[in-house]
Amino acid sequence: MLINKAEINLSEAMKAEFNTLIKQYKIDLYTKAYIEEIVKQSVDTLIPEQELKKYYDENKENFRTNGMLVRLRYINLPKDHPKFSTIRSKFFDFRKSDRKFWATYQLQFKNSALNDSVWVAMNEIYRKLPFITPENREAYMSAGASFQKPEGNDIYLVRIIDVIDKNQVSPYAYLKPTLQQVILNRRKLELIKKFEKEITDDAIKDNKYEIYK
Image (cartoon, rainbow, N blue to C red; front, side, top):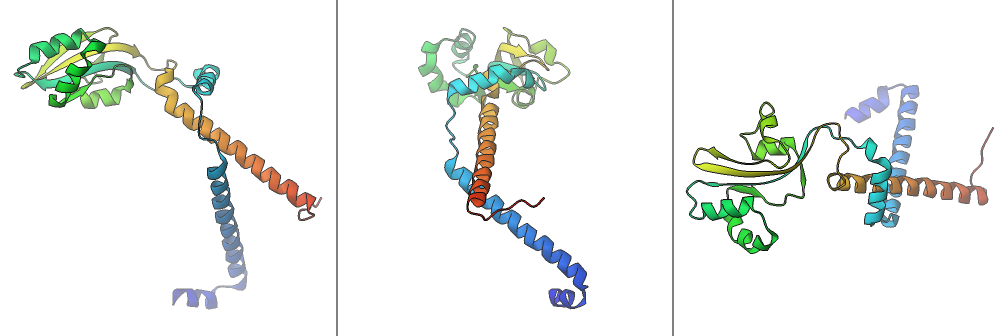
């Protein structure tokens, strides 16, 4: 009912303006969807490690940290855990040969992260280790630091491997997912430009396109 009333009562000039906008919107939707489909089918999503590292080396000054990054491992377990002494000893004297031990006991921990090769942002650390806060983090966040922290009936075992402060060059391992997306987006843009040029060139060749000066 409203659309019928609108078509009757709106001025011809206004309806003409709206029809132009509708036509342009249809063109934009169709062309955008078509280009995205072409790109999806054509773009190479495989990015070799060598290309990622090369891009990182050439552009790493543009990727500085917004905040502190940390590599660490930690365990949160009950104080009365029957294997506490063994777990504590093996945690602070961490060895690759103890993989079977950790595979057996890690499911018994309330929380843990044993892969200390991963860089983690401080917001994640505040969430996982609630006794660390923005106010006291300097007391804990030091490369090579080891400590245990009682919290009620639980205890945290923590080992800090490395720390990168704010406004430093972000490490490659931390940036890798971002670099993959940046390179992929660049490939997509290059493919779109190439595709648009090919369409224009074909249209000119077939006399379907003309530039008016």
